[in-house]
Image (tube, rainbow, N blue to C red; front, side):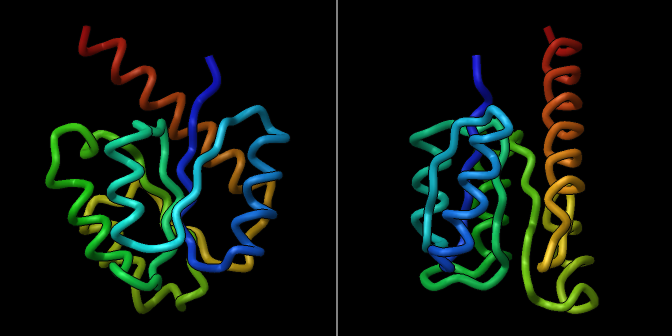
Length: 131
C-alpha cells in the first residue's frame, strides 16, 4: 500500500512540483493551501506524513502544528516543516511544537526524499513495536 503525504503550502506552483516529485517516488499525495484546511485534511485523509509550510493564510505553521499534535488521530503523524522562513527564526519553535524535521527552502530533492523515507520507516517500526 502506498504511503500518503499531505503537502501544505500556499504556493500552488511549489506544491505542484513537490507533488509530482513525491508521486514519482511512489507516494500518494493530497494537498492543502491554507492552515485550517491542513488540519481538516489530516483528519479526513489520515496521511502517513505531512509536509508543512510555516507561513500560510488561515492558520500559521505553528498553530497548525499545535492543532495536529493536540488531537489523538493526528498527533502520531510525522510533520516536516519545509519553509523559506530563515532557519534561526522558526526551527527551534517547530521542533519544540512537535515537528519531526525541519527543511529550508530551497531544498535538495534527494535529501528531502531521504528524510521522508527515514521518518516513514521509523513510524512503521514504532507502530510494529506498539502491537
